[in-house]
Image (cartoon, rainbow, N blue to C red):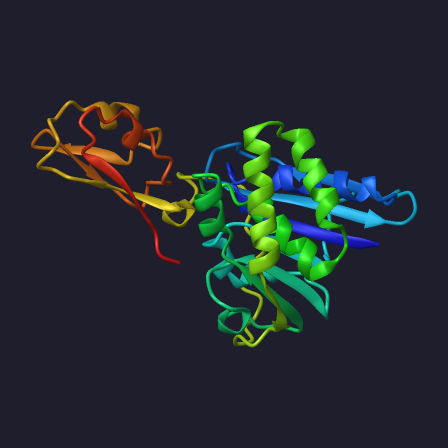
Length: 272
């Protein structure tokens, strides 16, 4: 049996990715089980999902505690050593990360593979929804499921133009993934359990939920207050009728960017 754990953020498609893998391997005659783990269902919050794959019926129904493969579809989470907690000796850590695996600072007795899924998603989908790109990398580095099976599963779930763009992301990642290398980062004591669902009010900061940061051009701002009214995290305050963003509270949802009538707020991609 092969056991897989996904880490991502709400809105990136971790749960959908787990289901697509299960559907793809089922097409190839294997048995599969996809298990989502839900908590506070908020865009940007950490999300975990699990997959089991076997050649015979799967009777287990618990969560995956010692995975053979860990897949991280969020680039910020990919920096956290805790995502590798419980990963079996000799296992695989597949990260959405913009550098080759030998530059990843996570150490342990496992292999590391990387793919810049965020850039691929932005260029093919126009949004940082990274799940299908990471699945292309998964197919290439593991061989557990064929690329064609994943394409069919994607097109069944997302017909039309959206499906075609997701297949393009899948294929690009298949070609661009960095093949696995032994983990070379510093060995660290187990710092914490893998990231779980939580939110502002529990955490002091949700800054690492962001892929993009909203930046206000105060000269363009007309003081309409719409960004302040619509911000779901109360991350915006007003000083002299102009918005000031508390980036510890900002999860990068983009509502302020969308609502600004004079386009005084722009999204700037965070560096990893």
